[in-house]
Length: 203
Image (tube, rainbow, N blue to C red):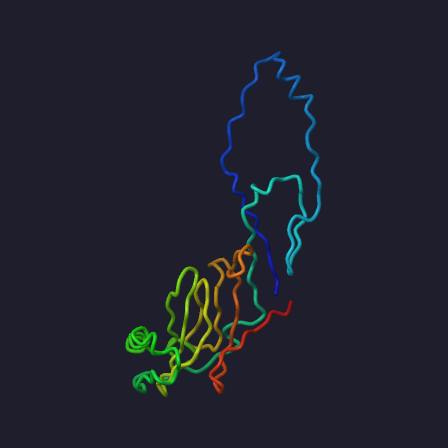
């Protein structure tokens, strides 16, 4: 997995330089001041990247870093055929221990949607705090309900793929590296076991 770094500055307000009259003693004072020389060293490090720069810069000038999310697999690698949703089985709320607690959400999603995940499943998710989202999936062929991953910053999924991304990056493919819950995680759904497995990066 390849990462790129963006560094954003919080210090966006600049003050106009104070004008100094000619022949002022202030000119002598300013010229006599020693400028701080930059010291180049390691200013940021995680398991994927090191950033070297001027360590004399104040921490307040760096707000956060963004990492580029570039997985080595894609939704296309887990394609499935689209199933006709003209008919569906009755929703089986007793098939999952958590389903009864969210029966209204499950019923509404099952009633309103055609399949939206992995060919013949309805992926249902809802907020459970901030930042928190829970989810379940419904097999439209049997009406049974299965567990699926939770997330902090939402989900990305396809009707014709078994791949699921929790905490997806922004539209430009970047995510914040300064919070543990911002990192995108890839899961793949196993049709036989009806379970999700996390896919680790190659790094």
